[in-house]
Image 1: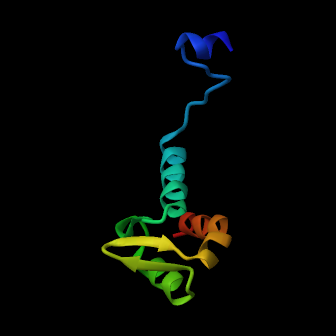
Image 2: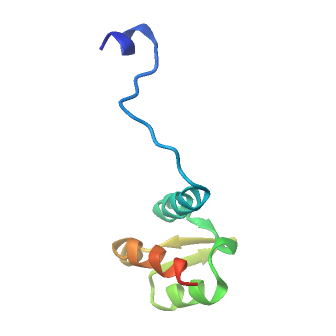
Length: 83
């Protein structure tokens, strides 16, 4: 508690991510937001499949998940690693 009241950083632990892990985290973060992520980050055929299945919507060059897509987030991101 003294660290937080003194203005010093409070950190329990940290980890160093690889470039691949950083990219994966960016995908997860982007897909969790209402604005989604840039459509260019997802292969066009994959994005089209997600939209056709009503798992995502594409607008203004961004791909955002629908509530149904949010339920499948892990599987959708995993499918990107197979692209």
